[in-house]
Length: 357
Image 1 (tube, one colour):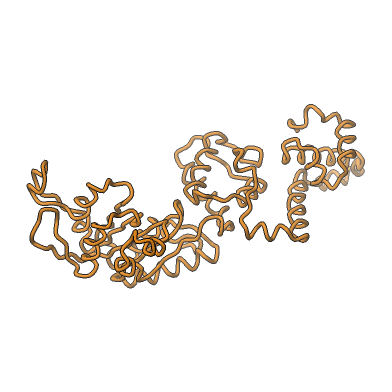
Image 2: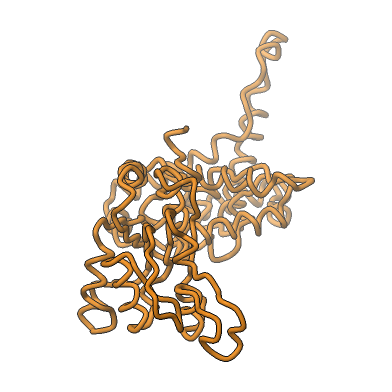
Protein backbone atom coordinates (compact mmCIF):
# COMPACT_ATOMS: atom_id res chain seq x y z
CA UNK A 1 0.00 0.00 0.00
CA UNK A 2 1.31 3.42 -0.95
CA UNK A 3 2.15 5.74 1.92
CA UNK A 4 0.13 8.36 0.04
CA UNK A 5 -3.04 6.23 -0.14
CA UNK A 6 -4.91 4.42 2.61
CA UNK A 7 -8.07 2.53 1.68
CA UNK A 8 -8.91 5.00 -1.11
CA UNK A 9 -8.00 8.07 0.97
CA UNK A 10 -5.22 10.12 -0.60
CA UNK A 11 -2.76 12.41 1.14
CA UNK A 12 0.92 12.94 1.79
CA UNK A 13 0.50 16.00 4.02
CA UNK A 14 1.41 15.63 7.71
CA UNK A 15 -2.24 15.96 8.74
CA UNK A 16 -3.33 13.11 6.47
CA UNK A 17 -0.41 10.88 7.46
CA UNK A 18 -1.43 11.37 11.09
CA UNK A 19 -5.02 10.49 10.12
CA UNK A 20 -3.86 7.24 8.47
CA UNK A 21 -2.07 6.19 11.66
CA UNK A 22 -5.14 6.97 13.75
CA UNK A 23 -7.43 4.97 11.44
CA UNK A 24 -5.12 1.98 11.80
CA UNK A 25 -5.26 2.17 15.61
CA UNK A 26 -9.04 2.61 15.65
CA UNK A 27 -9.51 -0.39 13.38
CA UNK A 28 -7.62 -2.62 15.80
CA UNK A 29 -9.92 -1.63 18.69
CA UNK A 30 -13.30 -2.47 17.18
CA UNK A 31 -15.50 -1.73 20.21
CA UNK A 32 -14.99 1.99 20.82
CA UNK A 33 -17.36 4.53 19.36
CA UNK A 34 -15.84 7.00 16.89
CA UNK A 35 -16.87 10.57 16.10
CA UNK A 36 -15.55 11.89 12.79
CA UNK A 37 -15.60 15.65 12.36
CA UNK A 38 -14.88 17.55 9.19
CA UNK A 39 -16.34 19.94 6.67
CA UNK A 40 -18.66 18.74 3.92
CA UNK A 41 -16.77 16.99 1.15
CA UNK A 42 -13.69 16.04 3.19
CA UNK A 43 -14.39 12.30 2.97
CA UNK A 44 -15.95 11.37 6.31
CA UNK A 45 -17.63 8.27 4.92
CA UNK A 46 -14.35 7.11 3.35
CA UNK A 47 -12.70 7.34 6.77
CA UNK A 48 -15.57 5.41 8.36
CA UNK A 49 -15.30 2.69 5.69
CA UNK A 50 -11.55 2.46 6.24
CA UNK A 51 -12.01 1.98 9.98
CA UNK A 52 -14.53 -0.80 9.30
CA UNK A 53 -12.55 -2.47 6.52
CA UNK A 54 -9.41 -2.87 8.61
CA UNK A 55 -11.25 -4.00 11.75
CA UNK A 56 -12.25 -7.54 12.84
CA UNK A 57 -15.80 -6.57 11.82
CA UNK A 58 -14.86 -6.25 8.12
CA UNK A 59 -16.57 -9.51 7.13
CA UNK A 60 -19.92 -8.14 8.35
CA UNK A 61 -22.06 -5.25 7.11
CA UNK A 62 -21.02 -1.62 6.93
CA UNK A 63 -24.36 0.21 7.07
CA UNK A 64 -24.43 3.95 6.26
CA UNK A 65 -27.29 6.21 7.31
CA UNK A 66 -27.46 9.89 6.36
CA UNK A 67 -29.46 11.44 9.18
CA UNK A 68 -29.90 14.69 7.25
CA UNK A 69 -31.24 13.03 4.09
CA UNK A 70 -34.01 10.95 5.70
CA UNK A 71 -37.15 12.79 6.95
CA UNK A 72 -37.58 12.76 10.74
CA UNK A 73 -40.78 10.71 10.60
CA UNK A 74 -39.01 7.96 8.62
CA UNK A 75 -35.61 7.96 10.29
CA UNK A 76 -36.84 6.15 13.41
CA UNK A 77 -38.28 3.22 11.45
CA UNK A 78 -35.19 3.15 9.20
CA UNK A 79 -32.89 2.86 12.21
CA UNK A 80 -34.92 0.67 14.55
CA UNK A 81 -37.27 -1.13 12.17
CA UNK A 82 -40.90 -1.85 13.05
CA UNK A 83 -43.29 -4.67 13.84
CA UNK A 84 -46.30 -5.71 11.81
CA UNK A 85 -49.21 -3.36 12.51
CA UNK A 86 -47.02 -0.76 14.22
CA UNK A 87 -48.70 1.90 12.08
CA UNK A 88 -50.97 2.17 9.08
CA UNK A 89 -49.27 0.47 6.16
CA UNK A 90 -46.99 -1.72 8.25
CA UNK A 91 -48.33 -4.94 6.75
CA UNK A 92 -45.15 -6.86 7.59
CA UNK A 93 -42.24 -6.38 9.99
CA UNK A 94 -39.13 -4.58 8.83
CA UNK A 95 -35.55 -5.02 10.05
CA UNK A 96 -33.95 -1.70 10.93
CA UNK A 97 -30.45 -0.68 9.96
CA UNK A 98 -29.16 -1.06 13.50
CA UNK A 99 -30.15 -4.72 13.53
CA UNK A 100 -28.88 -5.20 9.98
CA UNK A 101 -25.47 -3.91 11.12
CA UNK A 102 -25.26 -6.58 13.87
CA UNK A 103 -21.59 -7.58 14.35
CA UNK A 104 -20.62 -4.95 11.80
CA UNK A 105 -20.49 -1.14 11.78
CA UNK A 106 -23.26 1.46 11.66
CA UNK A 107 -22.20 4.79 10.15
CA UNK A 108 -24.43 7.69 11.21
CA UNK A 109 -23.57 10.60 8.94
CA UNK A 110 -24.63 14.14 9.91
CA UNK A 111 -25.72 12.98 13.35
CA UNK A 112 -26.09 16.61 14.41
CA UNK A 113 -29.37 16.65 12.45
CA UNK A 114 -30.93 13.84 14.51
CA UNK A 115 -33.95 14.94 16.55
CA UNK A 116 -33.82 14.67 20.39
CA UNK A 117 -36.21 11.71 20.72
CA UNK A 118 -34.01 9.60 18.47
CA UNK A 119 -30.91 10.78 20.29
CA UNK A 120 -32.37 9.27 23.47
CA UNK A 121 -33.08 5.94 21.76
CA UNK A 122 -29.61 5.85 20.25
CA UNK A 123 -28.11 6.51 23.68
CA UNK A 124 -29.79 3.34 24.92
CA UNK A 125 -28.21 1.34 22.11
CA UNK A 126 -24.80 2.64 23.14
CA UNK A 127 -25.34 2.05 26.87
CA UNK A 128 -27.27 -1.21 26.93
CA UNK A 129 -26.64 -2.68 23.50
CA UNK A 130 -30.38 -3.12 23.13
CA UNK A 131 -33.24 -1.43 21.28
CA UNK A 132 -36.92 -1.90 20.58
CA UNK A 133 -38.36 -1.64 17.08
CA UNK A 134 -41.26 0.75 16.48
CA UNK A 135 -44.37 -0.92 17.87
CA UNK A 136 -42.34 -3.63 19.59
CA UNK A 137 -42.29 -4.57 23.28
CA UNK A 138 -39.44 -7.06 23.41
CA UNK A 139 -35.91 -5.58 23.40
CA UNK A 140 -33.47 -6.86 20.80
CA UNK A 141 -29.81 -7.25 21.71
CA UNK A 142 -27.29 -6.03 19.16
CA UNK A 143 -23.51 -6.00 18.81
CA UNK A 144 -22.70 -3.05 16.59
CA UNK A 145 -19.93 -0.49 16.40
CA UNK A 146 -21.26 3.02 15.90
CA UNK A 147 -19.23 5.47 13.85
CA UNK A 148 -20.79 8.93 13.76
CA UNK A 149 -19.87 11.94 11.64
CA UNK A 150 -20.82 15.58 11.46
CA UNK A 151 -19.74 18.88 9.97
CA UNK A 152 -21.38 20.67 12.92
CA UNK A 153 -19.75 21.78 16.16
CA UNK A 154 -21.48 19.31 18.47
CA UNK A 155 -19.90 20.84 21.55
CA UNK A 156 -21.50 24.17 20.71
CA UNK A 157 -24.81 22.42 19.97
CA UNK A 158 -24.64 20.85 23.45
CA UNK A 159 -24.05 24.29 24.97
CA UNK A 160 -27.04 25.63 23.01
CA UNK A 161 -29.25 22.75 24.17
CA UNK A 162 -29.65 21.33 20.66
CA UNK A 163 -27.79 18.06 21.26
CA UNK A 164 -27.81 15.72 24.25
CA UNK A 165 -24.72 16.10 26.39
CA UNK A 166 -24.73 12.46 27.52
CA UNK A 167 -24.94 11.24 23.91
CA UNK A 168 -22.16 13.60 22.85
CA UNK A 169 -19.77 12.15 25.40
CA UNK A 170 -20.79 8.61 24.47
CA UNK A 171 -20.03 9.33 20.81
CA UNK A 172 -16.89 11.34 21.37
CA UNK A 173 -14.85 8.49 22.85
CA UNK A 174 -12.28 8.75 20.07
CA UNK A 175 -12.58 11.99 18.06
CA UNK A 176 -11.25 12.03 14.50
CA UNK A 177 -10.73 15.32 12.69
CA UNK A 178 -10.27 15.48 8.91
CA UNK A 179 -8.36 18.56 7.73
CA UNK A 180 -10.05 20.66 5.01
CA UNK A 181 -8.42 20.68 1.58
CA UNK A 182 -7.24 24.29 1.89
CA UNK A 183 -5.05 23.22 4.83
CA UNK A 184 -3.35 20.43 2.89
CA UNK A 185 -2.70 21.96 -0.52
CA UNK A 186 0.34 19.71 -1.05
CA UNK A 187 -2.18 16.89 -1.59
CA UNK A 188 -3.87 18.65 -4.53
CA UNK A 189 -1.51 17.32 -7.28
CA UNK A 190 -1.98 13.76 -5.97
CA UNK A 191 -5.75 14.16 -5.89
CA UNK A 192 -5.83 15.70 -9.37
CA UNK A 193 -3.82 12.79 -10.78
CA UNK A 194 -6.05 10.27 -9.00
CA UNK A 195 -9.31 11.78 -10.26
CA UNK A 196 -7.97 12.16 -13.81
CA UNK A 197 -7.16 8.44 -13.86
CA UNK A 198 -10.46 7.49 -12.22
CA UNK A 199 -12.65 9.64 -14.47
CA UNK A 200 -10.65 8.89 -17.61
CA UNK A 201 -10.96 5.09 -17.38
CA UNK A 202 -13.98 4.88 -19.66
CA UNK A 203 -13.40 8.00 -21.74
CA UNK A 204 -12.23 7.98 -25.35
CA UNK A 205 -10.17 11.13 -24.86
CA UNK A 206 -9.16 11.29 -21.20
CA UNK A 207 -7.73 14.43 -19.70
CA UNK A 208 -3.91 14.44 -19.93
CA UNK A 209 -3.28 16.52 -16.83
CA UNK A 210 -2.89 20.03 -15.39
CA UNK A 211 0.20 22.14 -16.06
CA UNK A 212 2.07 23.91 -13.25
CA UNK A 213 0.31 27.23 -13.70
CA UNK A 214 -3.10 25.57 -13.36
CA UNK A 215 -2.03 23.50 -10.34
CA UNK A 216 -0.59 26.60 -8.70
CA UNK A 217 -3.92 28.40 -9.13
CA UNK A 218 -5.76 25.50 -7.45
CA UNK A 219 -3.62 25.85 -4.33
CA UNK A 220 -4.91 29.40 -3.75
CA UNK A 221 -8.59 28.44 -3.56
CA UNK A 222 -10.71 28.21 -0.38
CA UNK A 223 -12.23 24.85 -1.46
CA UNK A 224 -15.46 25.21 0.48
CA UNK A 225 -16.62 21.93 -1.07
CA UNK A 226 -13.26 20.30 -0.29
CA UNK A 227 -12.26 17.10 -2.11
CA UNK A 228 -15.75 16.65 -3.55
CA UNK A 229 -15.49 20.08 -5.19
CA UNK A 230 -12.08 19.19 -6.66
CA UNK A 231 -13.48 15.95 -8.08
CA UNK A 232 -16.33 17.87 -9.69
CA UNK A 233 -13.83 20.29 -11.24
CA UNK A 234 -11.84 17.41 -12.76
CA UNK A 235 -15.08 15.97 -14.14
CA UNK A 236 -15.92 19.38 -15.64
CA UNK A 237 -12.47 19.80 -17.22
CA UNK A 238 -12.53 16.23 -18.56
CA UNK A 239 -15.64 17.05 -20.54
CA UNK A 240 -14.37 20.36 -21.92
CA UNK A 241 -10.67 19.55 -22.41
CA UNK A 242 -10.49 15.80 -22.95
CA UNK A 243 -7.32 14.77 -24.78
CA UNK A 244 -5.39 17.86 -23.72
CA UNK A 245 -3.58 19.37 -20.75
CA UNK A 246 -5.37 22.01 -18.69
CA UNK A 247 -3.51 25.31 -18.36
CA UNK A 248 -4.31 28.39 -16.30
CA UNK A 249 -6.48 30.15 -18.95
CA UNK A 250 -8.61 26.98 -19.29
CA UNK A 251 -9.77 27.06 -15.67
CA UNK A 252 -13.26 28.40 -14.84
CA UNK A 253 -13.26 32.04 -13.71
CA UNK A 254 -13.67 31.26 -10.01
CA UNK A 255 -10.45 29.23 -10.00
CA UNK A 256 -8.45 31.98 -11.68
CA UNK A 257 -9.08 34.39 -8.82
CA UNK A 258 -6.69 33.75 -5.93
CA UNK A 259 -8.42 33.64 -2.53
CA UNK A 260 -5.78 33.23 0.14
CA UNK A 261 -6.40 31.77 3.58
CA UNK A 262 -5.50 33.97 6.60
CA UNK A 263 -2.23 32.05 6.97
CA UNK A 264 -1.39 32.48 3.32
CA UNK A 265 -2.33 36.15 3.49
CA UNK A 266 0.04 36.66 6.41
CA UNK A 267 2.82 35.02 4.47
CA UNK A 268 2.09 37.05 1.36
CA UNK A 269 2.61 40.31 3.23
CA UNK A 270 6.33 39.65 3.63
CA UNK A 271 8.65 41.04 0.93
CA UNK A 272 10.42 37.68 0.63
CA UNK A 273 7.17 35.82 -0.12
CA UNK A 274 6.32 38.35 -2.84
CA UNK A 275 9.76 37.77 -4.38
CA UNK A 276 9.31 33.99 -4.19
CA UNK A 277 5.88 34.22 -5.84
CA UNK A 278 7.24 36.32 -8.70
CA UNK A 279 10.16 33.96 -9.16
CA UNK A 280 7.78 30.99 -9.36
CA UNK A 281 5.65 32.74 -11.98
CA UNK A 282 8.76 33.69 -13.95
CA UNK A 283 10.02 30.11 -13.82
CA UNK A 284 6.94 29.10 -15.80
CA UNK A 285 8.15 31.32 -18.65
CA UNK A 286 11.54 29.66 -19.00
CA UNK A 287 10.34 26.17 -19.93
CA UNK A 288 9.32 27.04 -23.46
CA UNK A 289 11.90 25.96 -26.02
CA UNK A 290 14.85 23.62 -25.42
CA UNK A 291 18.32 24.76 -26.50
CA UNK A 292 19.50 23.81 -30.00
CA UNK A 293 20.55 20.20 -30.43
CA UNK A 294 24.27 19.46 -30.37
CA UNK A 295 24.36 18.69 -34.13
CA UNK A 296 23.22 22.24 -34.84
CA UNK A 297 26.26 23.58 -33.00
CA UNK A 298 28.59 21.41 -35.10
CA UNK A 299 27.26 22.77 -38.39
CA UNK A 300 29.03 26.08 -38.14
CA UNK A 301 27.29 27.46 -35.02
CA UNK A 302 23.84 28.91 -34.41
CA UNK A 303 22.23 32.23 -35.27
CA UNK A 304 22.47 33.75 -31.80
CA UNK A 305 20.50 36.92 -32.54
CA UNK A 306 17.69 35.01 -34.23
CA UNK A 307 17.43 32.54 -31.36
CA UNK A 308 17.40 35.30 -28.76
CA UNK A 309 14.74 37.19 -30.71
CA UNK A 310 12.58 34.07 -31.04
CA UNK A 311 12.92 33.27 -27.35
CA UNK A 312 12.07 36.84 -26.40
CA UNK A 313 8.94 36.62 -28.53
CA UNK A 314 7.92 33.36 -26.88
CA UNK A 315 8.45 34.84 -23.43
CA UNK A 316 6.23 37.81 -24.22
CA UNK A 317 3.50 35.67 -25.80
CA UNK A 318 3.53 33.20 -22.91
CA UNK A 319 3.42 35.97 -20.31
CA UNK A 320 0.41 37.47 -22.08
CA UNK A 321 -1.27 34.07 -22.11
CA UNK A 322 -0.72 33.57 -18.38
CA UNK A 323 -2.14 37.02 -17.63
CA UNK A 324 -4.98 36.77 -20.14
CA UNK A 325 -3.67 39.74 -22.11
CA UNK A 326 -3.11 41.99 -19.11
CA UNK A 327 0.00 43.88 -20.28
CA UNK A 328 0.69 45.44 -16.88
CA UNK A 329 0.82 42.00 -15.24
CA UNK A 330 2.82 40.56 -18.15
CA UNK A 331 5.39 43.35 -17.74
CA UNK A 332 5.62 42.54 -14.03
CA UNK A 333 6.30 38.87 -14.78
CA UNK A 334 8.98 39.82 -17.29
CA UNK A 335 10.53 42.47 -15.04
CA UNK A 336 10.01 45.05 -17.78
CA UNK A 337 8.53 48.52 -17.74
CA UNK A 338 5.05 48.52 -19.24
CA UNK A 339 6.15 51.03 -21.91
CA UNK A 340 9.09 48.78 -22.85
CA UNK A 341 6.78 45.79 -23.21
CA UNK A 342 4.35 47.78 -25.33
CA UNK A 343 7.19 48.82 -27.65
CA UNK A 344 8.33 45.22 -28.06
CA UNK A 345 4.76 44.04 -28.72
CA UNK A 346 4.36 46.71 -31.37
CA UNK A 347 7.75 45.97 -32.95
CA UNK A 348 7.02 42.25 -33.12
CA UNK A 349 3.46 42.93 -34.37
CA UNK A 350 1.93 40.88 -31.56
CA UNK A 351 -0.83 43.35 -30.74
CA UNK A 352 -3.69 41.49 -32.36
CA UNK A 353 -2.51 37.91 -32.46
CA UNK A 354 -0.70 37.31 -29.16
CA UNK A 355 -3.07 34.52 -28.14
CA UNK A 356 -2.20 32.35 -31.10
CA UNK A 357 1.47 31.92 -30.19
